Amino acid sequence: MKDRKVRVFSLVLAVPLFVAAFWIFSAEVGATDDPAGKLFQALNWVSESPDRAWARVSLGDVYVSLGRHEDAIKAYKTALRFEPDNAFAMNGMGYAWLGLGKPEKALQFFVDAAAADPSKADLKSLGYTWMALGKNAEALDTFNSVLAKEPENTEILNAMGQASYSMGDFAGAVKYFETAISVDPLKGDYASLGYSYSALGMENRAKESYSEGVRLRPRDQESLNALGFSLFSRGRLEEAREIFYESLDIDPDNVYVLNGLGYVYSAGKDHEKAIEFLEKAARADQSQADYVTTGYEYAALERHQEAVAAFRRAISRDPSSAAEAWYGLGYTLIAMGSNVEAMDAFRRSYMLMPEPRTLNSLGYAYMVVRNYPNAIEAFNRALGIDPEDAQARFNLALAMLDLDRRAEARKYYGELQKIDEELAAELKSIMDEAWK
Picture 1: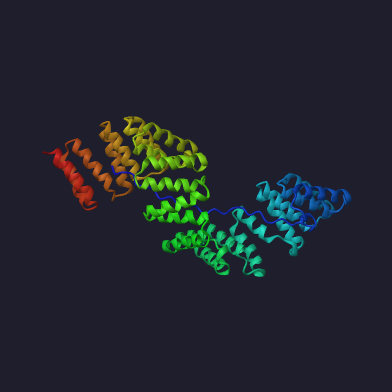
Picture 2: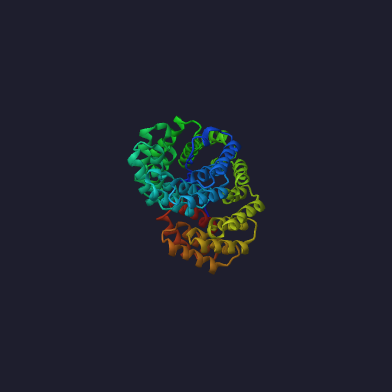
């Protein structure tokens, strides 16, 4: 069986939830940067004008700025009792619910604020809330309303690019990101533009975007990381490593950078260094740990117990997406001589992702214990999925060799010559040695 190839990992374009700048109803509230002073003043206004909506809104604004979102909601609710159409209070309720991580509750208040007084509507926050809820078409409509008044708003143009990307409209995303860059190159989202080009298969343009982002903002970590992964995917390991180390200087605990260095060292067969960075990534953020690659690196060093532990961590973390982890576990168990357990691992991998390579591995495990009927069945099932599968023919020929069924072994050799000459030459050498 052939060695496992290094997998190329891609960054996923993440759209963070934007928390809008808060409306401060009174200029006097913003006159001091002292949080305690702001709160004291707002409470004083409420004491002096207990039945006035503006005083409660001011108090709510201060609570939001302090992260006390539940207290803010109470203040805004009181304001809305006094003045049901107060758009500032509605916007404030939206900010507070966003702060509590509940965009579905925030949405209606931003919509109501726009209906109550369009001049005071926070369409920007409404658009971002639509995005947080996965309603990107609605977000684009809302952002278009903002753009009609502010055609050179780079923040909105970038947000529209992100919404378009999330909808799968990569060409539209490119248009918005490039427009933002043309308005203000220093505020352009070069990393997202690169992701969009990459999604369109325009990898050279993607690399140019990442590089331009790094040139204009040398400490732009997202562009650095995107450039590093772009170089890595092209096999330019030295350059990728330099970029990742540069990014690591900015944030030593960045899990994407640590994993990236792990992949670079893995591709360079420096398994000890690969493990060092992959383990650092796991300590920095277990939810982003790549236990599967870590398992393969341990396996490459024949540190089988540690490999098994890594694969099992991957399986326990996400059982429904553990096909690769089960596959790696199977290989490791074969190396340890635990063939029955290996068979079970390959079966589980196949159930999650029915690929010919898994059936080939399962068949190999059967061959190790000389269960040829089941091995041959597995190899033939692999051919049923992919009639051009060279590895299955190679394995079938090996099984026939072991059973001394020479005519069938030669048949598979002849078929293999038409599909994979290199593998056929390897099989010919084995056959010649067996039939001396």
